[in-house]
Image 1 (cartoon, rainbow, N blue to C red):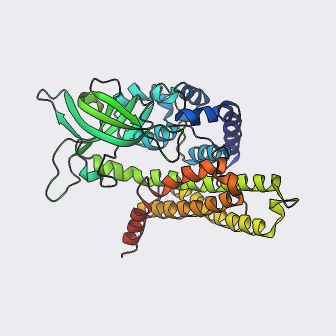
Image 2 (cartoon, rainbow, N blue to C red):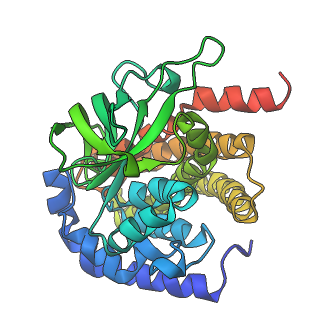
Length: 385
């Protein structure tokens, strides 16, 4: 079926991204994979390409495009190439929506130029050891000083993507105790300078997949955060997190669809080149049936993903819509990638082959952004169950 999501401008952007990935990322990606992160200077190249400024308003130096479609194309092309751009996805996909909606005029003037250029890389720190998806149970505190000029931040965060290279981190912390009738009250968002005294980057976590994306533990010991770096209103952080979760979950859904499509591409190329019993593996009926079944599932995931992107751009994407898209696309990707790895035989288990890395990278899709069990709970609630 003809895909109608993108226009000529989008496809021109796709060509630019694909060319950039082929010249600037693919030749170096094995080195980045071995190192466990991309070089810090690579983010400057993404800034020069204009990737970070697409959705930033024009008055701050961005392109001012109010659409998720360019970000979706970047995700599709990154997975098509079998590479990763480190923590840049969090910088744009997760952090930018908070800055656009909540930052004051002074904060935007101060942060957006560096954000666009890749000079100020952002990450977001929500999860804590022992709390997982229960964000209301966080223990990190930020107490306002007696003179009201700064907060004193103490606590720890884990699973922070982009945490190694980040220059600023949006930290979720308790600025007040929870109320008896509302345990979500009292959480605020602070944009913390990672060069602050008492701010420590702990272990770079040794993950099963996404090995080129630096994921770290962070700790805060009496970190002074100026009140000018409070993002949004005090004590309303939990509601802000909830407002941005649908877009985060859509991003995961789009990524999962793109991974599944890439898996079919890798498996098709491999089975055409690999000979068994004197014939290409692709010539066997089982291979054709497996790839055909995978393609049918990916077609369905593409339709779900595209419809959700249109809804986000139109401002009609609900929490349940995003949960449904994430649940469906991530489950499809898990099945498709597994079947495509099987078609590689023993080589599918070797990290030299992109399908093996993709298999490992894909597994977290059903965990982060809210587990798929949480997605089912959201959908069921929307059904009135």
